[in-house]
Image 1 (spheres, protein in one colour):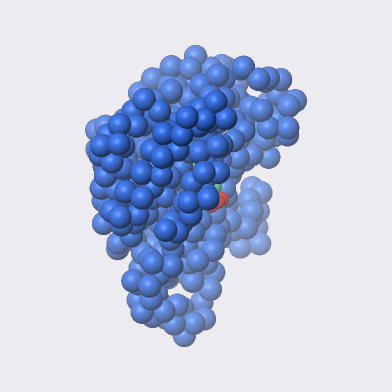
Image 2 (cartoon, rainbow, N blue to C red):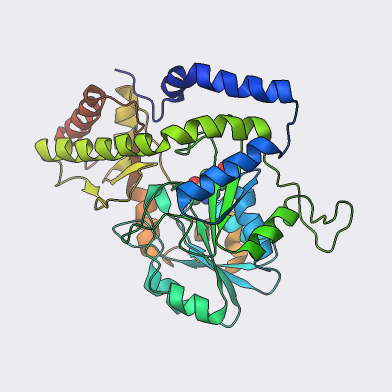
Length: 376
Ligand SMILES: *Cc1c(COP(=O)(O)O)cnc(C)c1O
């Protein structure tokens, strides 16, 4: 059996006529950059996330970059974030001349360790970027009140977490000052190219973001600030508006699949080998990630059985060559370093079938039944 990590063709097949109609609408209109489709998507995303304002941008990376710019982050500032995330989370900090201050993750959830984030706050701290990794909301109670008192911006990297909820039922993106989403095709709400969105509860910050995304021009050709080309295009917005209507049901399907994997792993008595992060009600499972010994051998074995998996992320950010100058070394963040060796993402997407999941779970069990699996 062949099982991809994510099957976008199945999703498109179900939506083909609606998406074609949305594309036709934009083609007839010939309004390609920002405009009415983007305005409508912004209203719909704001409502979906329980935020007052939403600003469409060119990618999740640019959402983070523009949010940091709107928060006034620049040279001499420190920005605290997780060392276990996609590169963009830290890249945007360094691009603005600020210093990424890395913090380890929680061993169970893979998310930024809140106590350590709080302890890392210094007089230079200008922002904190928690990452809602794999679709689970990061716990922010340890530092959010202190950040508020000190005027430190909290910028949620919710690229993998659109529609996720925290333990109080609040939506990812609406918890801090800015919520940044990505519409990269592999995210739960994926465009047909790049795209992103920033949500915020502040009309002042929303206004800043709208100016920053058009090179800082307001009025046009007059620049009090320097922004960039961070614009979202109408084709992406029109496609995303179709998909947004299905997002809640897709997330529910992903949650069901996560439960089914858990049941299958229990049936196959895999608890001695693989560790599962706890299930939380608001998790939207952009990825279903297990921790497993002999991870690279398991991945190769599964590939031979037709099962595609992915390692998120093999190198924590503090060990990236480009950040060597920050002075972190191996051992600085042992929990993240261990996750980088042990974490493996299994196929998960709404259209995944029970038969496919059983096949995946049984092949994982086969691997650990081989006497040599663990010594390999
Ligand atoms: C995908 C992703 C981004 C970047 O989003 P792009 O749209 O690809 O620029 C940032 N942070 C995290 C955690 C992501 O997963």
